[in-house]
Image 1 (tube, rainbow, N blue to C red):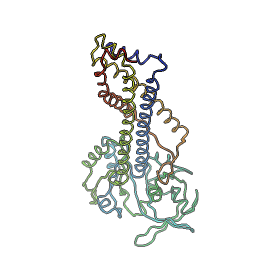
Image 2: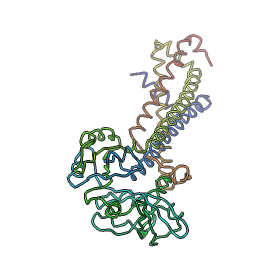
Image 3: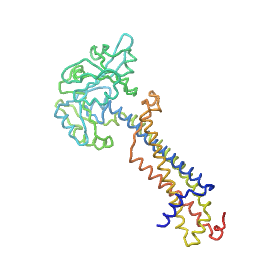
Image 4: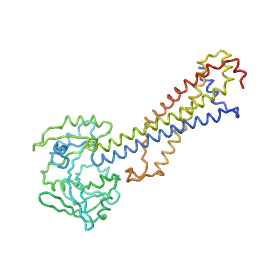
Length: 414
């Protein structure tokens, strides 16, 4: 197609240093580049932030919990449910479930000579996936998580340790209030920190058998099971399968099973994370407007400056549509170069943040210490394609200016 060939020659032409269009082309290119860079960074930061916070919440509560139905209807109470090996194996075989693990949870109070604090003791067994705790462990080690032998070891958060003024390897008393007060002495073997204040202030991790004995439950009764999924995007689909498998079925003790997703357990957090998508859309629209405005103004200047060229093309028999195609191809090449520069700039900034972490945040406000980034190549490709399509479409109307250029007058135009 000769229109493409002519457009490419115009794009590669480096002569005519005095032309006004040269700085205009540069400005238009950088307008697109900066817009694309900001859009990519916005998406990566939002995805990274959502992924980081979501991962921390899931670390405390898993993707799906299967518990006693009364525990969900009465959140201040914890009721036991039978969770033997057969049930755990049945849950782990559900399509989409990556791992199943038991847990026991009991409210209590940690007390030292200086202070005291109410916490939730979360007991986990040998099958517990410790990836989350290892990732956020600051000092010490993890307790020996067992469902057969009590270790009397706990791992506490930095916030709880600071409030109670306890250090690694300190011994601390825990009190549990039932018909009578029960006391238990634990050794602090690890300190973790996730920067999620509400969770860090609440959860103490210990072995499964300790919490189970504190409740006085049968050997096969626990607070429930946690299910970890292979893909968070399949949460609703897997939750439906789990619901069909166990919901409202009765265990041998007459208790009913009921499943709930992490989104149902902490709806306020996930609603807040979903609101971040609106901010991204606002940024994307603004940046597209910036890129489109610079390209429209640039194209108009380029057309006016090449009036003589347009007149010659018309005199040689080219119709308005063919000439418009030349300038649209020319503009698409400018946009393409802007996309290339924008992607390169975004990649450099992302790499710099990932390696050196120059941009930090207040963890008290943002729950993370540095700006998190998550690169999703599908979204980046979508941004590039959408920017190209929208920018070229925005240039269609201005390109009709060519129809008003008369060959005889334009050839004499200087």
